[in-house]
Length: 604
Image 1: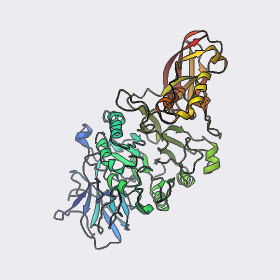
Image 2 (image 1 turned 90 degrees about the vertical axis):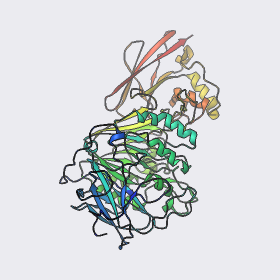
Image 3 (image 1 turned 135 degrees about the vertical axis):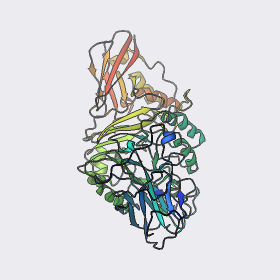
Image 4 (image 1 turned 60 degrees about the vertical axis):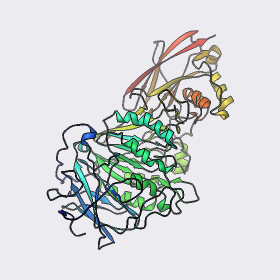
């Protein structure tokens, strides 16, 4: 391809990332150098339905005479028709990649990269611009090149793309929202439906909530893996769900998004790629550079493990090398770099975690993960025995957040009146979504429970000797245990043998505090059960969340017998007989306060 502008007489193929494979171009936007011209204005204010930039990557049919090189132009699509017209300028300084090599566009917006089979070419969305979305709100910024298509796969994979096209051009629209220093980035973990009923649970839950929100319109929503639960034919239904959003949707793959019948690792995510996009990529909003990674390695006949292959690592090095040092780096993955729930497992954490830390040394950074179906706000300096013994990491260099799951505990538990299961997660957290509220390079994380407002942040309970005896008797009967009666009745014998007021503060972390008053008395400090100072996880009835466990043992699901965000206050042995009111105030690491009350009874 010699010239990409002013092709008014050349037939173009506008490629949408729809189901069934086909051609798709990956635009991944990085931050523009200061010398780049200031973006223009966005369309007049209005709702997402009227202002969304809908379009596609512009693939100019070939074949190109040079089959060793992929090239094209990144341009400002002023008339929003996805094609570069005479009056539409190319944009210089934009990052484009083939999934290994990384380049930036020249002063005319042109790029050129080495081509190879089974590559995905993508553009890094620059701040101040927006890549197009399709009718399902899925971001369109990539092109898969797989000449012969996928091998025979149960769920189809990628259709043959044929020889390299003449050009792959990336349209962008100007956006005040992505240029703002203030961003609200939605992170959704583990939608993971296994059938149509569970798709409907997701629709009635998190996606109905998101349809009513507009704060994430600029940054969009990033769904961090296990988009479905092994049945890849459900991807079209997931796309229907993202059609409910008020912003762009992006994805990264999880261990339940695999083509398990692929005989080689290079094709294990072909169906995912055909429907949703690249395995890994980056984009910019405000002063944040978001890096979406594929941390799932799978080889036929084995099991998956947390890992980055060498090509992805090479891309990550090249991508970060082009990002200014004063930017916030957001690393998003399915299998987390490190986590509390599986702190002693090499399979459920990322083998190359120390290499990633080295690449981020000296930068403002935050890491996000899913996979564990738990909520974890892990702060710099936190340490656990497993991280040191198994992963060789003595303490965290920056914040890591496990975002919880939209599916909660795999849609388990009792069906609620709202039409979805309780699905309490393995640490007692409730299903919901995470939002990163970013100002410049400063981040405040915010978790929103499904069907609730942002003030709902904790669960209060009572851990008595009677409860612990019931737990021990029925721990092996998860899903069929008899109901624990009168959970808020405490006997004098219970008080004499240690009873705790428990607070499961779902986004609580090192630096958080929990205090309580009893009947309006003096304020007392609760004690965190897991201090994160190099110890092993504390597991069992005395470290459990009784509120969650009393549902999980009866109605099914994981058991919340360990948590890094549980606080306890021992109740006085001399509490008077009768009704008592505990008022609990939890303060997070950012100074935000949340208050709840619990009424319980002391009997003789």
